[in-house]
Length: 188
Image 1: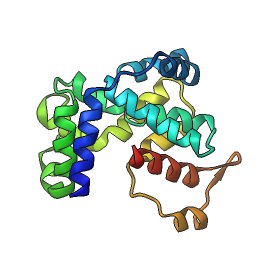
Image 2: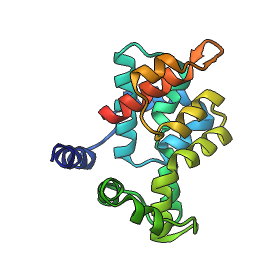
Image 3: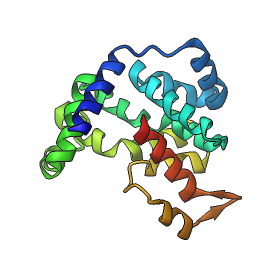
Image 4: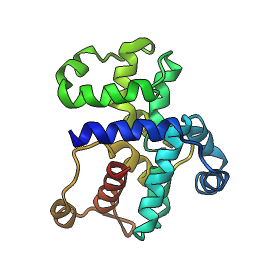
């Protein structure tokens, strides 16, 4: 029952979400003029969630720029549903999370890449990471940031996996950064 009460609390906090001007200035600084529109297109509660993810990472010492971009844009792909006529707002996201947990086969069966409507909204819920990564790349985000966005919903990495399956790219450990993003996303 903890998961349900957590989701109810998350819903209530989402209703009250209003990003602070300092947070918006941080997003402007980290994303730049090309990628900022992806962030500002997200609803206020999604922006607030992204700021919490970023703050959690920063509080634990993560200052990698691509990780910061991924923290802010990891859910940007969810906006695709609104473009298809059904926004993944607070009223729909909670039930979708529960459906994904308790009836994942049904959710996948109903989801369809139709470009519009409720079935498309289900598709976007499932595929928002890949959608967001494509959008981030088109808006000038770095390859590592796009990779982190694309994989943030992958099966959660265990700490032992992170230590034994290092993939070093220009001094950054992708799996370590991905595990950090997944942890911060899950904590918020």
